[in-house]
Image 1: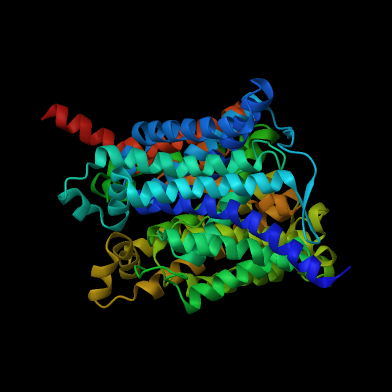
Image 2 (image 1 turned 135 degrees about the horizontal axis):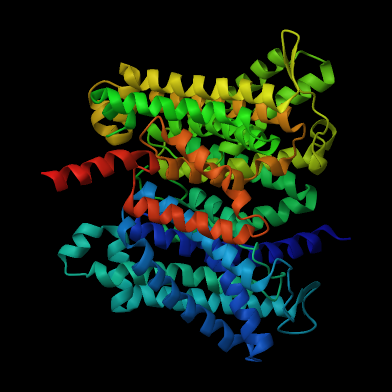
Amino acid sequence: MDWSILIAQATVNGLIVGLLYLLMAIGFTLVFGVMRMVNFAHGEFYMLGAFGAYFLTTTLGISFLPALAITFAGAVVFGAAVEWSILKPFRHDELNGMIATIGLAMILQNLALMFFGPDPVSMPSIARGATRLGQIAIPTARIYVVIFALAVLCALYIFLKKSKPGRALRAVVEDFEIASIQGIRSKVYYPLGFGIGVGLAAAAGALMAPLFSVSPFVGAAPLLKAFMVVILGGLGSIPGAAVAGLALGLVESYSSLFLSTSTADMLIFLIVIVMLIVRPKGLLGQGEV
Amino acid sequence: MSTVSTSGAKNPACAILGLIILAALVVFPWFSGPFVLHLAVLTAINIIVVNGLALISRSGQLSLGHAAFMAVGAYVAVILGQRFGLPFFLTSVVGIIASMVVALVLGWIILRLRGVYFVLVTFAFGELVRLVLLDFTDITGGANGITSIAAAEIFGFKFDSRASMYALCAAVALLTTWMLKRLFNRPIGHAIDSVAVNPALAESTGLSVHRLQVFSFVIGCGLAGLGSVLQAHYIGYISPETYNTSISVGLIVMLVIGGRNSVWGPLVGAIVLTPLPELFRGAVQTQHIFYGAALILILRFLPGGLSSLPGVLRKLTGKEAA
């Protein structure tokens, strides 16, 4: 096999996985930025998103794109409701907020276990066949996933940069006190920020559902990756999460050419530790260590 | 910070009542069936491990990789014992020291950073240790773990029955609790508490936040190693899944429900939560949902945990009387 093809293939795979990490990490870092809360339930929202897409497409027979939109919207509403009803007393209380989300994660995962059972289900692929780009073969389903993921990211970018609530949300992330002096109402933006953050996790879950199997346990791995990404990219930094997410996906994909999966995971942990020693702010973080 | 111990000191009757209840709890498993005795051993081991977590928590940090340090201690001790036939006492000491050394290296690096990074890295470290244990099959036995671990033996006395093992574990559990109580009555204990409450102020009064947190982390992880060495020699079997993240989370649940700010918290948490799975037998999901809900409710309405309940109740009744 030709090395250049192998590497090109690994690049494509790395970018796809990187997009997943990116979506997870941006949601995670957004929630942290808004509420100063490490959301341990983030992986469970990924899992719920995957189940949402699975049931909408297989049971209700809705096609994938509307299913993705419904899952995202549902997760935003559900996330906002959870924030408002359960997490409200823990805003800006890093330690207790974190423990509360651990409790939330336990509840969500075990409810999923009760209702959906422990056995993994697999969702039918959203497209058949492979697309050839020169000599590289990519399953068409993966191309769709990449396009949809990029669409979600574009929508998020436009929302955060151009729309009024998006700009208000960024102001809250930047500095909560000054934002509230400017008349931005925390009553609205805490649930909204949390909802959009976990909505992104659910969208990642829905996008990955056709590629991987779906079970109540699928949230753990993406959560761990989101942790790695935000440490590398700097906690609270959205551009940092984007760069580090793609980089992590690529590193994983390339290292899988030479190393076993667990060796690659150990290597990434070492990179994270070295990063913490050398540049604790993260790639694009702005202080606050 | 109102603790049972300080309020008890003001009221000797309360302290005596507390001691009588504690003594009754310690003694009663010997006079009940083997199953209760088994639960009592597990409870005592959990008290030791959660005591370690409590010490870390008192310095203002939350470790999500506590089970990983249990794994380091137990694996080192068991492998030394089985491969080289070294005696239990020696392997235990080496195992505990191994936990502490790993904690020292990791803690030195990550405790310079804000608390959140500590949590994320300890969580990732827990996964890493699990991977290493699974991967180095030649040494660790991989996913199969290590079986037929000999019973603990100190100076020729074998702790091979439940009753004798309970005696050992209960003694160690009470000893570690007493040591923590002593620690927090001393200046260094107050220094650790002050670091948790206000690190900037502690630093400006000349305390080294970094050193105190590393100290707490190292000792706390040493206690994790101590508890897990006892556990390994009691159960006779260890595997990577004995020490996965859900174990770390379970320990945090015990600590928070028992009470983070009192030396009695780990004791109360372990005693209440260790036997609880027996109530939910065959309904693990219900049990975990209950844990999650209890965690959130305790944080919301009783942040001091169950061990702060007497103080809170006394305050309430006191107010009514006044």
